[in-house]
Image (cartoon, rainbow, N blue to C red; front, top):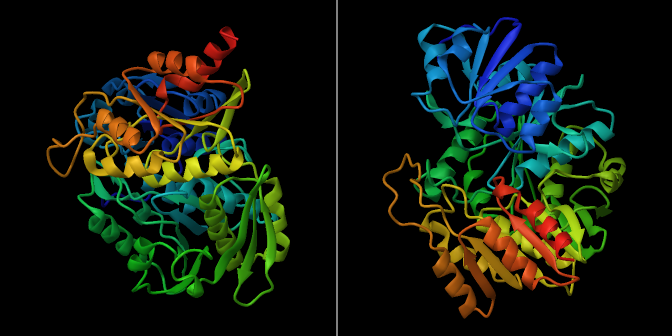
Length: 484
């Protein structure tokens, strides 16, 4: 943008403060004693609750006077903000200093730290939290910012005095005035790549376009940098081929190219307390690991985190046993409650791969119990037909599938008009052909009533959405309690 470096400041205003990254940076700056204000549309937990707890006031709606009357030292513009946003226009046209979220985060919090960036289609939030937790447990006092609420740290950010800053590196674009991926702005010293699959169909035309973004990220790694790569994934292997720095590969023994892994999870098993596996390494004795998370995908996330902290000097013999105290992140297989013997779980899964992984994890966690998968196809990608058949494969491992019908609203796209839309009714029909009980409903209240009539003691309900889903888990628990 050609703007001068950001000077020390007293007041920062956030446009679109309700995003997990934006809200977390706002909280970090507020904790430094900087006055923080913000605006957004109606917010929902957990970020709405977090901002309130941090004492940050939020204006509902966007108005030019929110910027004009306050005259902040810096305006941070979120990537959900459009070019005609009145507050963004006021900031830019009046000559105020402004930054995208990504640039503000790097300049204000990361520039003088060793940057550990966690990238990939899946697993970023949990892996980021794992890295920060292990560094903290080993006395490294890291800083971090995560796209969720960490149960280990009681929030979504931390400012430590140590050398490391751990952050999620998202491939989504940065701002309306900067269409490059956010992760290009974090200048990683250590880069984790968990997976590379097609997603964000509103800005990427196909998988090759996604891979191109990751290849750019990898090409900019310094020669002294380290890439921690999930070697069992074809997408990851294809983007690291010309890496300019050291690459450490990790994965499960059942995956392709397992003989090339530097860190391998072997003898994986599930128990009522989590996952057990043997960590095999090329140059060190193997370690038995007990992980209080569920699912083979979380074993893989843990391998990436262990490889990353090992690369910055931690002894895994001392570090791995500390995993037993890890709590994780809200909305990742989070048990919201139990009524009438029915367990209700909230999960962030929305991409078909993540949906399949969550169902597999819960089947292992609650063996022999009926699993009801309740899914909201909410994202710009899931509302398209692009994953129509993939969702059938992802959901068919559940015993019952309930899907909310897609809202008939325009789908934003930078890649052209969207005409081929996802069909809930077709999904339900295909699941029934696969002998899976499935239903589609128009609204949350209908879903809650239908579920209450079918559920019995011992059942598990897995709710999957990357949005608020009208607090369906709370409504279902309340309905179960009232009809007990």
